[in-house]
Length: 447
Image (cartoon, rainbow, N blue to C red; front, top):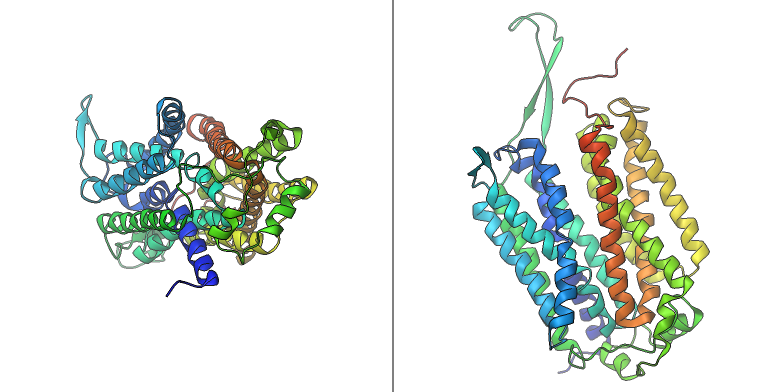
């Protein structure tokens, strides 16, 4: 018996979310597993700086996708998506047995296998924004929000796996000054072993990426027309009332096949993609991703760790949870006003400025050692991530009316913003060392 329209609709939303989950899960998984792998790799805690450079170089994936679109005879969108998914799955599958292999380079030991595979995964993840997003022009705007919901899960699920694994568990124990007697004037830290190994973690990550690839194949079966034929409606200026009426005319109650049949053919109004309103939306999208993917993540440890590892883990996990929640909110209430989005961005920047201030004042920020300090830093990270995640979803939904070219431009804006944010934070952190980290189990702020 054929599936009901409602069941088909729910299944499509689920598949789109799982498809989006595979976009950045690989690189996010490597980041959250760093506290485990640095214990055995020769670079130790300089490894994050190596990884930051590799992720920045991963933007070469944008050039490779652009070159393929210029030279390939076939414009089938499935090919670059499947290549990206294949690289991600193979890369994480190879990380599981090879991540701890080292080799001599210029007379020094280096984790060549880990760094090489990390670069491959960075290429795939950076290319995902300009391959996955344009594919969604085959579906009406509400499905774009399901995609960003899944993209939020690409950050949340690796964090949950790391928490289950027990990454970074530490206990501070007082140590007597003289052997076994005397007052405990020193504190020693004990790192607990993880519940399962990095090898198991990477195999689990491979399973998540395999699920995402399978969801994409399911979407291809549900689509009413070949993916090589863009199901793009008449190109309009993104974010206008005309686009809102189109979305209301093809609501969530209609399955994708019915919606596709009502979409009209393209017309010569594509130049409106380059209107001042579209430029403002693209600029705000780039700034949003510069802050959320480059600037603030670079200082998250400096802003949170002075308040303890619990505050840091809560900020990471709850901040990642804010992304899917913002996508759920966008499904119910979507802000289409440019002034409203600017207002929300100012609110998000307020929380970002507070977090940056805490990072600059590390290791002795205000309210350190108090419950109020922990609550404020965690709440600020949650609200910062939630506000800007909502802005990202709202802008991308408004750009959907521009069709495939607008979604390609949105993907480029996301990657360029993320790259510029990461580059901007490299000198103050790695060269000038503006931010100072504290020592485990040592109170550096006592008078």
